[in-house]
Every structure is written in C-alpha cells, then in structure tokens.
Image (cartoon, rainbow over all chains, first blue to last red; front, top):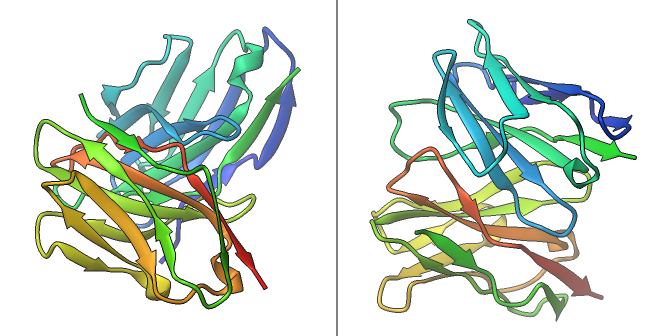
Length: 114
Length: 113
C-alpha cells in the first residue's frame, strides 16, 4: 500500500511569486484535503477535492487554489505569495463514503517566503 | 461552530510516568474525535479515533482516550511514558465525520530520562 507522498519537501520563494505543491494520494483513496500548518500551530483546513471538484473550503483567500486529477493526485497553487504563507502544507487523502472521517497525511511541503 | 482546546502547549513527564494530554471540544452535532502525533519534520500519524462507538478508545503505541460527553472532553492517556513518545500531539474534531477537521494548537510532550 502506497502512502501519501508530497513534493517538493522544502522550497523557498520570494514575496509576490507563485508556488505549486503536489500530492499523490494513498492507493485507493479518491478524496484529497489540504491543510496549512504555521509554526507552532495546528493544521488549518484549506480545501478538499473529490471527483476533481472542490468539495469544501476553509477561510483562505482565492489566491489559494487547487486541482485534482483523474488519478486522484492533487495540486495546491498559491499566487502572490505573502510572508505569512510560510508554513508546512499538508496533504491528506481519504476514501469518500467511508464514514469514519479518517485522514491519512503526507509528510508535508515546507514553504518559506522571503 | 466547532472548536478544540488543548490545555498545555508543553507537557513534561518522566520516563515510566503517566501521560495525560487534555482536549476539550465544542460541537453542535455528534463529533468524530481524533488524536494525531507529529514527529519532527514529519506529517501527522493517527493515534486513535472516536466515531460514536465505544467511549474508551484504544490506539497505537499503548495510548487510549475516553470520550466524555458530559465534560466535552477527549483526553489522551498512556500509563507509562517512553522516550520515543516525545513528539507533538494534536486533538481534532470532525462533525459527524465530515470532510473538515478542526485541530487544536497541539501539545508538545517531552519525556525526561
């Protein structure tokens, strides 16, 4: 069973730039969620994708956007980066219809905005 | 609105001592509750979950938690701490297993030799 994998693991950008983070879901999972974890904080829900459609969104501005592909992998895009976007971005996969709510997390992509 | 409060951002225990990490939640609907552990530079790993079945939930690595509706609590315990338990622990609530997890701010556990 292949777990959730994310890339890149670390990256540095400057303010105003754009970034794309990638996630491959666990084998058999069809739903992907993205979370932002700032230093010293708990993860905060950004959005979830199911069947290539956004299936719920947290309190994040539109410059945070995403995609899900037919193979269930996903991308998180952030435009016009701000210093406060520096964080660990976590991808989590799950299987819709299995009502246990359990999420399986990847190891994250650590973004530093200078 | 749902929320999670973890009392104590840092907890230190001696090796072999009882571990108690506190979590209180608020939820307008029956919640699903989770404890996750995060080791340095890693993602989150599920320790245990409550999904409206037994109120005492056993998880991995000897951890367990008890759902107490009257106290709106879901505290995490382990009878005897091990050095390898040093990590950050997050409590999370998901209203009836919906897509959105709400996490607490975490408790960093330090185990003293």
